[in-house]
Length: 253
Image (cartoon, rainbow, N blue to C red; front, side, top):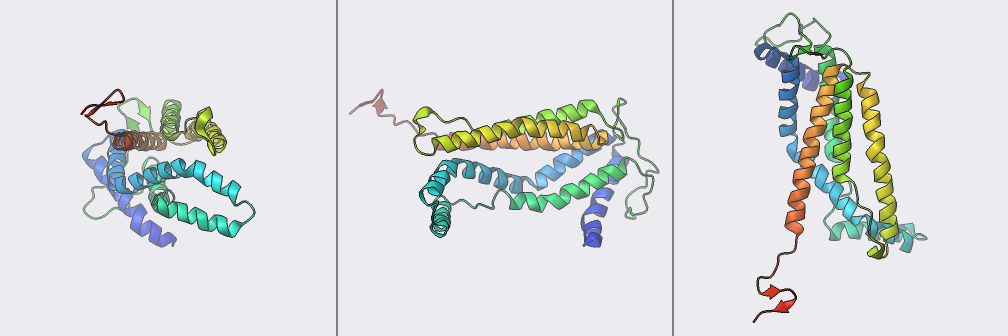
């Protein structure tokens, strides 16, 4: 399994990283280009994951109602839950599977950046990829991306906050009815995650090479932008269209 991972993911990504660096000898720009390329390749999977998360959020109040109604009969609860998913065409695994598929790519890229910024061993390069001899970790003449960079860690945390904020749930109104209380509890949990994950991101980022923090920041930023675009598009499509023959509640004949 390790050999398969190394051959199928790590070596091609490492060669791509070094190949782009041979053309554009600025490691920061190389990381930017690689991040954009990977996000474009994974765009359909990311879209599917984001849409599934939104669908599950919208169903949460109804799911909580089912749990209360059938709390003493787990078999019926499972049947009604699956029925609800089917009625709304929601796949409960839709938000997880795309992320699981992407996980090996992220791990491979992590090691590529880790090694690419600190090694002089380029023995695994393909014959058509130029050996740079060494990779200069200084980007834009300012940042040493082989060492921890507090500024980049803070940017990564800020991007993580924005991403979480774009998917956070609003506290339901008092007139929300059944399920409103549970939806409010979900909102409170999301609020805790909204602040917890960015802090963890900053703490971890301050221990990693700056190149990894830069990738983390760019990757999270692009994901947040994609979420905002999809959310606006979804809200626009779900906005009821006004009847041109109806003005202020009066029907015009």
